Image (tube, rainbow, N blue to C red; front, side, top):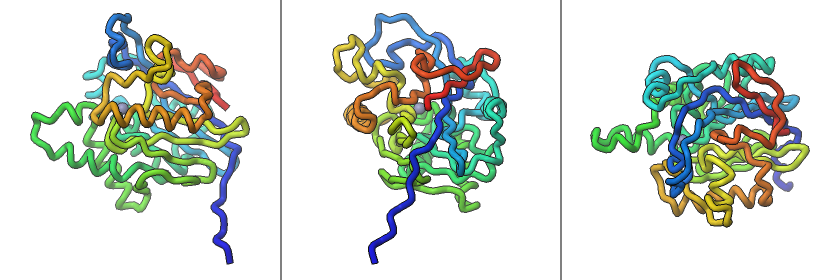
Amino acid sequence: MPAKAKETAADWQLYVIEYARSRNQPMASLLLGAFDEPPVNVPFSFVLAQNAKHKVLVDTGFMDEGGGHEMAVKFDIPEWISPLRMLEELGVKAEEIDHIFVSHAHYDHIGSIDKFPKATIHIQKAELMTWIEALALPPRFGFLTSALDPDDIHTAISAAAEHRLNLLEGDADDVVPGIHVRSAAGGHTLGQQFISVDTPKGRYVVTGDCIYSQRNLVGIKNDGVYAPLGFGIGSIWEQLKSFDRINEEVGHDLDKLLILHDFERWANFQIVKEVEGFRICRAV
Ligand SMILES: [Zn+2]
């Protein structure tokens, strides 16, 4: 008897939810080589994907408390609103979230996973394990973990003890029907992944921190030469390979990218709500 095909779906709705903003970031920290451009304010966001069966987050934002607050001070993030409050604005309660895909474990992407008690958390095994390894290194290696809140690693381990942690090894299709993960390991972080979501308008990609802007893909001078990120702990080589995979995944239609730190603030999507200046944009 043939193996049963894995269930899939292509009915996802996608929202980008902004929840914080840092100020005056050097453009070269976003686009390597853009040394002569003025600084920009950089938004922070996460994504809600929902259909009739599931409410799923890609990344979670961070809470302005404990280690999260220390990071907000360190990285000069004066504007913040609770990610939970922003979800409530869409009528979504934390207990309703049944899956969370974590692109990578930087504090601004994983920082509120402890607020979603029913969710299964999907992260690359290499991401979690390499952060434990990096934390164990002597303090002189602190640059590696400069955007990591160790409390988030504790939370992930607690989720493992509750059997809510799914450690992925590379690409996987239909982790939740219609949602696929693609490894971008060794670029921005050592276990980075991006997330593909099938919608009525085709496949969209939540880029995590594989890119900060469409400009990483189209080039600083718009010449089609990939511009690496200004910040990462892996290699430029792997970053650029992940750019190519992202491009392929959306058939080179960059309007199908949900870019979490997009300093154009998702101009290609419809704004459905603004709360205290923070946007909720609907991509699909
Ligand atoms: Zn990051």
